[in-house]
Length: 209
Image 1 (cartoon, rainbow, N blue to C red):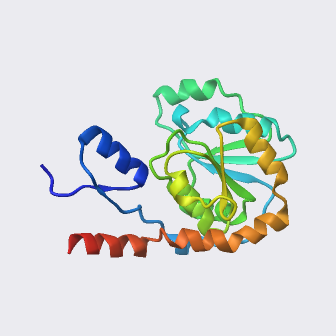
Image 2: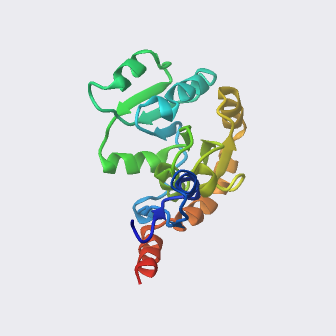
């Protein structure tokens, strides 16, 4: 019986239409882009994700098994005692993948600032704030070609949308040299600003009024 529904993406808007038979407005979630900055292209790729099967963590590990000379830092935790413990026990990450668990916001901002690029592989992500945070730090995003990633990443300019296939991701990482990644940085920052919290507030105020 609500008067209006607001979806966080076109992806979610489609689900609401399909299951509830109602249309919605779309207002993307707020991202604090001002917290992020580009410091360097480091020697590691970054992933920030809860450690659950729907995030396809095993795909990320398979990608970097194919890239023994590359490094992946995977940030994220899970709720103790749930299914994630059994899932993680089966994964057996290679030596070039570091699972650092949950960390402070300050350390996370620094990892964004110094990573080489960002990898994200969730199944049909609702929206996906972490790719926008990575772009706000001027970093290229490699994501699976589905869900909310299609609404934030501009292929060839701020990142690449790829099939959920380890070989496809590994091949792209091999192709991305430092000049290419640096050339994408300004476009990444500009794109991220389209999802800044100030934009969110303006759209919410307009909706309310």
